[in-house]
Length: 576
Image (cartoon, rainbow, N blue to C red; front, side):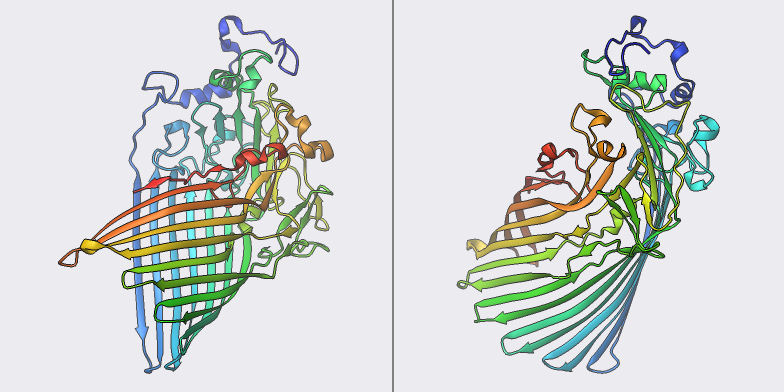
């Protein structure tokens, strides 16, 4: 309460202690729930142990039938069911799971059925095909589900809501400490996802050529309640050290963050609301391919072919998806008014990718193998667009600078902005976060290549040495276009300058390149009595902008974007 709004001139509390009269009543209720440390020090000072329940059952059944000597039919059914129960690490104060990232009760079932067949037209010509269906159901919620702890127990306005799926414990994150209450924004999560696949293929052997070609069609559907963006459906608050720090003084520490929590002054807060339940997306996948395996000589075999893939723009079950237009600061709601279902997004229909391989026997003891293949990135953009406005309203409030709070626990979370789809071209509120794609979506691809030498060695050994690598071109990732340069606060946010937008605006764009290079060695030794001993070693390096196709960039400003390129989280230099 002293000094200026930029954090200058602030006075320290007497004795460096927050007076009891200033400690927030809601913070006091939360502190009473947090278990006391049972280890020394101010970091890693709590040991927790709790049982984990994980039961699963897997069933498979398959029937084969040959109605004639030329025809064969088969049917397969599989079912996988599980029950998972994990405890919150902080007990009555919630937090993450003791044994997993998703505390609470989680159960699900995956059912898969396939019908296929083959028919021999002649000894040289065979056709085959199949049709498959998979349904994945996952129902998960934390231990506080069904109780409006934010509203009824803590008395924080704007938390929870009339829908039971908004019940539970709001999330609290204090920089430097274990998150408590409901720290998992993806809880609850209710998913009913369907996948259909159809395929037809033909194989024709003619002379030294073995030809194969085919067609595949896929249909993916997500049906979910999972408004996990921002602070989740119950709301949440985060506390950073700048609120109780002095500009020009010592750098904020974990104790500054805890002091901000004691005062009930969050640096950011918000809530997410899913407007359609379930949120439903639909994605088609089209594929055609052709391949020839050519026995050039008894020692040389070549394999070459091409594949065409097309991924149309995903849509919803009753309307199209949504796209934010950067130039007008408007959201286009597909299928509403005059807005087309694809919102004008253009997908490449001409993605034809090659495959090439060879196997060459140099003598009785040495074989060379090499291969190259290009694959289209299959990642479905319906996944990140599931969190787009207005399907999910992610309302977030941030402080104008790092020294000021975004609000208070007593004031809670402001009411969610009203929604009116109108003619399908609607305003995007400045405090609502959004995820979108570019109008021209250039789907990326992966180059895969290898070169291997296999050699028969003395004393019954067989050795293999190879180089294996991949290049992911235009890998997708999430970049916040509204990130401010360091030290500028909200005043430096590009979209705040243009449109008074302070919330994150994430672009899911195919714009990044990752690579993997490895030296792979293997030594085999066959022994009597059908024994085989194998020794293998891989030396590799993986460099990426993100570990997944929907990873968020850590550095988002244009001048620092390249700093995201680093060793991947899954990089393992030595594997023996």
